[in-house]
Amino acid sequence: MTSTDYDTLKTMTCNSKPILDDVNVHRVTCKEANGIKECVVKALNLSNCGLDKIPKQVNDLTNLERLILSDNKITKIEGVDTLPNLEELDLGGNKITKIEGVDTLPNLKWLDLRGNEITMSDCEAFDRQHDIKNVLC
Image (tube, rainbow, N blue to C red; front, side, top):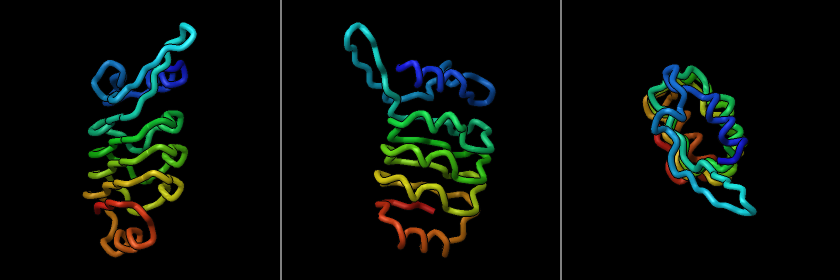
């Protein structure tokens, strides 16, 4: 991992355990150039971690393509707007009441918001106004 990714990940926890001690980091690609090994995190699973908000450290993982934050206690979608490569965002089973914070994600193709406190009319309106392939509410 790049020192930035490593430093970011070592500060994140799931149920008070460091995520690096678990199997939550997936799809890590590594390459070596000039004797320096660099790795990039493409997928991160923080489901069932007891989170009440999206960890601010997620903002630093700009190569993320898949982020799973399902079955937590998250009330607001924030902190993902700096993830230009994000294709899949799973926020199912949280306490979100409003769809926001995803307008600046150009590659988002799949958004799961099932099991939240979002009305069906809000979900349908969001789906009509955005070019996201799959919006699940």
